[in-house]
Image (cartoon, rainbow, N blue to C red):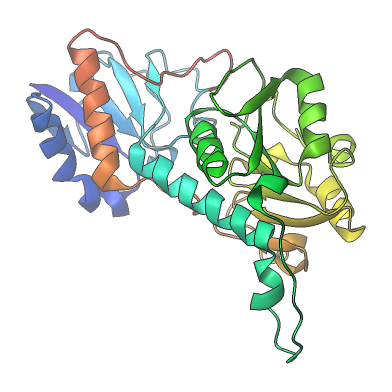
Length: 309
């Protein structure tokens, strides 16, 4: 019998209280899933940073931590964490991100806002180019970025992928490194950001790189708030060099009511909803990963503490 501590917000516990034990049992594990336990008895922790747990040192028997979130920036630097940490990579999360990204890329590609917001009775016709004539940059080619890039390529968009290190994806033109980023941005009529928050990605889109993009380009950020220099983005929006920014993530969340993004005519704010962890599918991913480790096969999607993701 293993002991699994569920450390996340109290209000989401009812969504996992029966589902997680059932998923572990389906994987052939005899498991006790609890909200509280003697740290010396805990084998695994299913974790979210908002659960209040910050000191892992009392968990002397701990084998690993399975995150409920894809992002790990709030835990990866914790000096008390000495065991493997696995990111949440889950089909439901991936599907949700693909749907959100595809929806907003199509929205901007088709110019839907012009019709949705028109209330003046003017019959103004505008016809978008075909998707194959629109270049979309996917900045970040992890599990989520790759899935979104493939979905957009399936709609015939001219997708250019970028990652910090070299990657190859069938059907996607990929680039990497600083020179590759500049090359991709120069062509990007729509840029989607799906990168982790690390020192190497902070302010990835700064004034210099924003200036590389075609006039009127659109930025869609469901990744992490610090990827973009907010002041530089606002200046580019004010000047019309960037046509619109649809932002789902921010440096401070919830986004303060007085923040300029709320009131800017070229900004769409969504409340960090692009890809929620869905308990129905997340419990299966978490249970399968723990079961792998218990069989001696090792955790999937482990974090490189040196890289920060």
